[in-house]
Length: 366
Image (cartoon, rainbow, N blue to C red; front, side, top):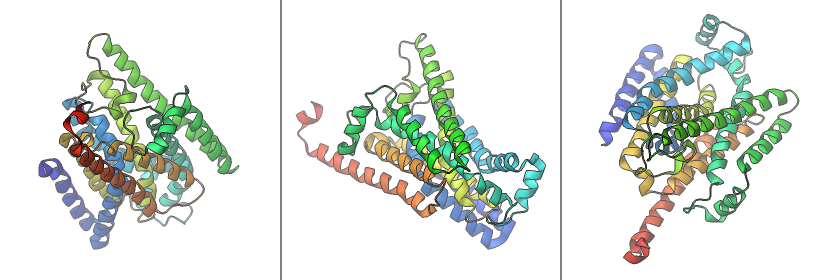
């Protein structure tokens, strides 16, 4: 199972490292490897969340995520997105943006590709931070039977009984960040954050809309997209328009998670080729393989707190992204915080499973 799931990732990574070596020698190979490891460490919580959504899709849309989704992740987010940001910010046409990217240059030198993209970081962080914050809030405000950090999640579930609780908290956070970002960034940060919030509700709303439409034709209609993150693998797998909306939701989540990796990569190298090889071909492929592995092994159902740990990591990443609008945060902290939450949730799940195994049979089935 392991080799079958990760075989393509190892193969693609080997090719990417060879291309990196031919392109820039041992230094380029090393940088590509570092970027790949950085992406995997930053995106482990992404894989857990992706897995919970992916298991709700039928096999066709799962394959779409692993094929078309990879193309979007590698070339869309790691190559085209930075070029688009630089082109719009510097008012360059696509050819000029590519030429500027290939010219390289340090991140602290005005006019370089890395510098221009770094200057756009506040708007990118506001969009991605608010989008991820809404995912975290909606998960935590839902009153579910299973709770991990009960002492904290139970009060949050009570707050969630208020209609529009996540929207109120999200708007308050956006207003606070806009105020703290300063007069020079306030307008652009607020606008980017609003777009992040609108994108979240738009994708969620469209998913619910298409699910409702299918319910009229099928007595066993799938659950709304907003519930897809928290249901076990035994649930009905969606298809058609509902699956397409889940696919879009997955891609937006993946894009939001990749913002910190793309920006952070420029602290290591400004070469777009190496970034594409490291973050894209190596990192994105392994994250997708890990997602499929979690689905096929039923890991999220066996270790029930992983969902919670991943969403706590999402909340932490959202806060970090919003903080980085004004204050620099080390990539080490960004990468490790997700690992810490996932690791703690995994250990908590092991202890829970051990306690359940020691319980009398009648207590477990009650």
